[in-house]
Image 1 (cartoon, rainbow, N blue to C red):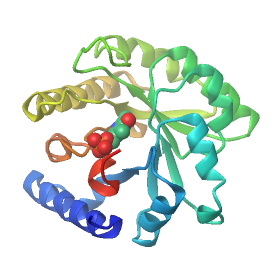
Image 2 (cartoon, helix red, strand yellow; image 1 turned 180 degrees about the horizontal axis):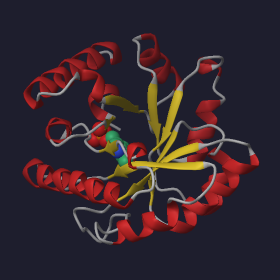
Image 3 (cartoon, protein in one colour; image 1 turned 180 degrees about the vertical axis):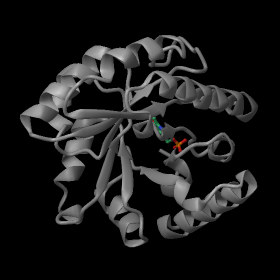
Length: 229
Ligand SMILES: *Cc1c(COP(=O)(O)O)cnc(C)c1O
């Protein structure tokens, strides 16, 4: 079995190569290591190999890892990338760098309220279901524009961009990533502060090269770093 550290090196090289192909700088793309279902010890191994941004999907598991002795005292940057129910926002609001995947205006409002109670400003993304699969969460590309209108004015949170999970086939995925980029461009046209809307969270182990070619600023990679779940 390959080690987490050598997997990370390989993934970083592939990111660099995709950035060359896309004519983009490597520092335009943030690698989020998706550690869901993996142990705190595995996260520590990635940390020791220089990885700082991690993605978790399940609230209870996330809270346990934040408290894990293996990670105590380390300034890990946590991204919550799973589906977030409104009633769970309170539990994670003061522990996250960014919440990806907000799929309801009411959840954004709850995030705003809870962030205010902690005197924080929390960055978040709206999830868009570009593949239009009924099993997936997220706004349609049209409805997200309207939803964002309601979100812009919320205090203690900053809408920073969009997130998506693409179809499994890389050729379809590429088209969907392009659509997410175009949707963000439209969103900027109506935004009170367009310069805040910089983030496209898209691309996973199987399709991150396509995502980088289409402008991803955050890629979320689990399997290629930590192995199969
Ligand atoms: C699990 C997960 C990932 C990582 O997927 P891999 O295929 O293992 O790289 C990325 N994004 C989200 C939202 C996930 O739930």
